[in-house]
Image (cartoon, rainbow, N blue to C red; front, top):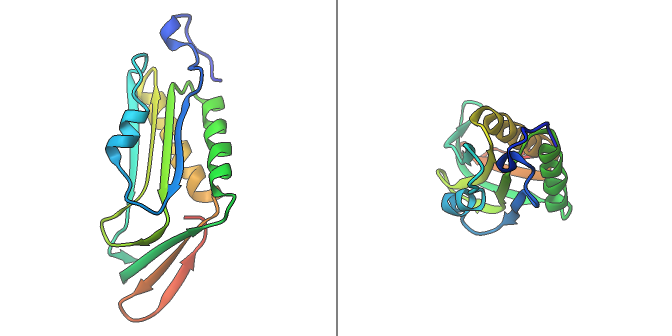
Length: 153
């Protein structure tokens, strides 16, 4: 755990990882935000990834996510690493799999820390590492009939 002040409210939370999940159902901003609520936190950072209507200059018609059975375990490993590097009071991450539409929530992550700067940094580390290391794959179908697989989110 990163260094903290002597104030009891800034001591490490007993179990800061509050919610980790991969789901085939719609994601909820409220659920993730509630999961990271913490009275000792002065900053909460939340990132929401949504399905956009284009990629690489092409119009996206359909998108689906799939994952390896180890994906949730990899999410936990990354969450534990973030908790070890930052003064995280509470952390949550959920990722969607299955068929999604433009505008749907694909991933929601949030981190609460004693201060805003730490929360921003920890949240960015969390989403960046999830994107690069968790075995979740995106299959896109474009309006011209072509398609592509994109590895790790």
